[in-house]
Length: 100
Image (cartoon, rainbow, N blue to C red; front, side, top):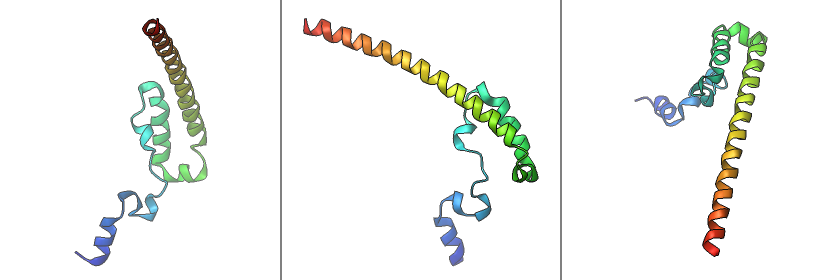
C-alpha cells in the first residue's frame, strides 16, 4: 500500500476529502421520526442540485425544517418534563411512606 494511502486510511472517513467537509446531512436528521420527514426530503431534493445549495435557494426549506425540528423538540421536552414530574412525585411519596 502506498504511503499516502496508508496515511489516508488512518484518518477518519469524514476528513478524507476536503470536498466532503460540511456537505453531508447531519446524522441526527437521518433517523428522526416521521414528524419532519417531508421537510427533510424537501431539503435533500433541493441539495441534490449543488447550485441551489450554494446560491441559497434552499434556505426556505432549511428554515421550515428547523421550525419543524424545534417544534418536535419542544413537544418531546414537554412530554419528558411531565413524565419526570410524575416520577418525582412517586419517588417522594415512596420516600415519605418509607420514612413513616
